[in-house]
Length: 209
Ligand code: URA
View 1 (cartoon, rainbow, N blue to C red):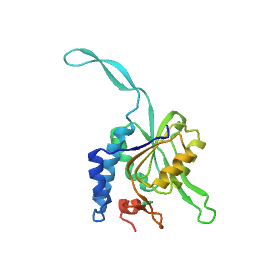
View 2: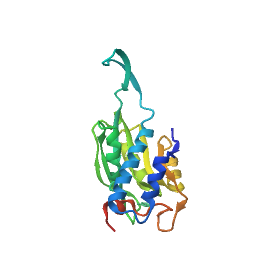
View 3: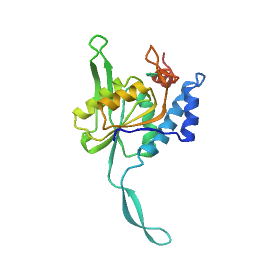
View 4: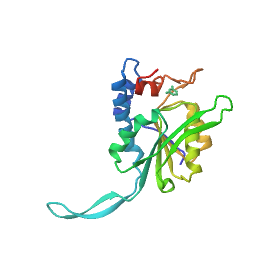
């Protein structure tokens, strides 16, 4: 519990290089984020419990295994988290998707939740909170706190790139949450961007500025 996993699989690292590059355009960026999220889904679901089932193959009867009724929820933090949803759903097609939208009031610095819509049974689900960038950790911490307040007890956080500051902030407030990353970068700069990072993930996903 509360561990940080950097998924250093060559396919993930290769695709992440192209995600980072300035010259990668919106279409390719979106496709690559989707692919990396899918590859990360393999690792994040590694501990799902299996149960045996008896089946007939064309050759014989045998015992094989299926995932044993564990319910999964994917929770993108709006808006950049949306770019990671389909990649996870491709491998876990029965997962439900909840959405959370937050911003910090610039004056009070208190989180303001402008959107929160979850499956009704989040207390029974393993929730995977997705957001490409874990910068200060503020949004991830606020989203996880919101989920816990509504009864969620089993939460994982999956991001493409994190700054050490963000990882420490989440570990401190939510030590029960495992964090899965494609890369742990150097630092945050004075503008709050992760260095070397990839720039603004939402803008690059959706072609905005
Ligand atoms: N959010 C982003 O999209 N990029 C960063 O580098 C930091 C926060």
